[in-house]
Image 1: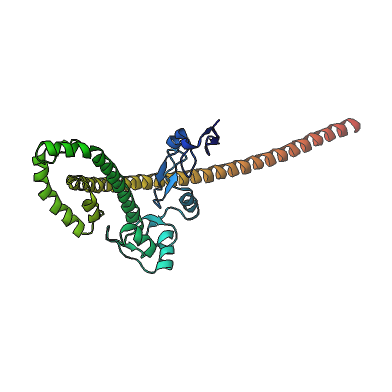
Image 2: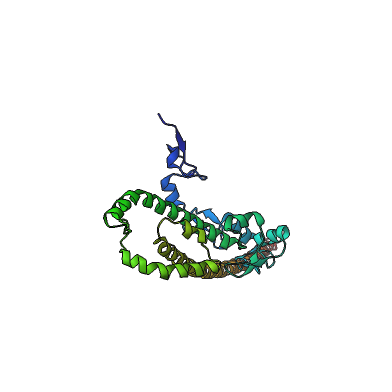
Length: 307
């Protein structure tokens, strides 16, 4: 019988292949607790609930220092102390002052020589480095898929080429031969221009591609990545605005609750003082009543004994 391993959340046992790497979560727990980006520092963390939008470290800092400000370097809203976030502060101490990022053009790229090797030698900021690595990974997977498809369809293409006098035909694509030939001179200069400007794709990807129509696919991937980045930036701005409004509402609610508690404590104190005054007055009246009653008894007894 195969060994079973416990999920770190629900503690139910599953085969090792059914658990995620690193966190060791089952499929249901991965859906219930997805990996999201912190609203403030933008690091990824496992979401405990749908309302939890900031990581534990930022949540602790909010309690200690309040709502953070945008960092003067990277512009990420994570500056809890001073005008710089902790990431930029540590990087500045280790790598010196920041440089202009080749992607976003902000003055927030620190020269990490080891990391530059992983992004084709580019000088990128932290956020752009993560985006660049994701694009490289996606492109690598796409190239692997296309290479596999091309190797699978190669015998069929060669057979068709011999029968039709060497005419190139790709049975896996919907484009005709004439449309591909018309597309190559249009897309290749565009790709060369993009590469010359230092974009996120390397020219070696196109040179190593098995089919000429890969230029079209790479250009489409480039446009898709740019569109997704724009949408992500817009959504991030919307989330930040909502978080800011929620924070303001929470602060206003806390202030109102504080004022209400002060008012209730004052009313309770006033009520207590009035009650004590009334009780003291009541005791004084009782003493006076007792003294009057005793005086009347004494007068009556004196009137009886005098004859």
